[in-house]
Every structure is written in C-alpha cells, then in structure tokens.
Length: 77
Image (cartoon, rainbow, N blue to C red; front, side, top):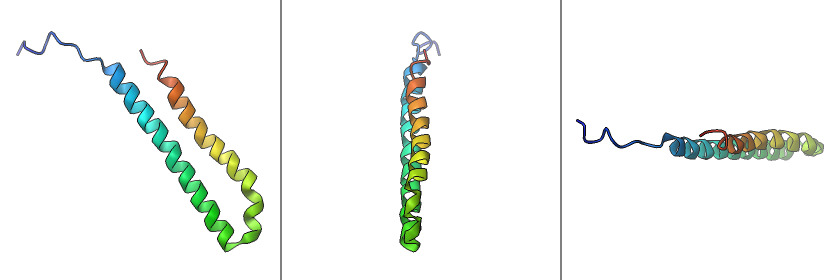
C-alpha cells in the first residue's frame, strides 16, 4: 500500500490541459452553431443578411469565453 504513497501527482498540469481543451472546444462549437443559424436564416430570408453585424457581436462574445479560459490557466498554480 505504501508503494505509491511517496509519489505526488501534479494535478495543476492536468487541470490546465482540461481547461484549455474544453475552453477552446466550447467557443468553436458556439461559433459553428451561430454561423449555421445565420446561413440558414439568410437562405430562408435574404433580407436578413443585414444582421451580420449582430452576428459578429455574438461571435465576439463566444470568443471571449475562450480567451477567458486561456487566461485562467495562468491563475492555476
């Protein structure tokens, strides 16, 4: 039982990897869904193409969550 007790596991590195992985995957899925919904809306109603500016605001908000996840790896010690 005491064989593995002397080894320590650095969980900070594992936590950083998981944080960057999910922190990058979430915004990528969100941007894909936003783009898909926008293209679907434009194909159904071509006059809705004027809402591209609003789409870019939402894409920026989704990307912000990825940047926050990336910045938070520097906080984890």
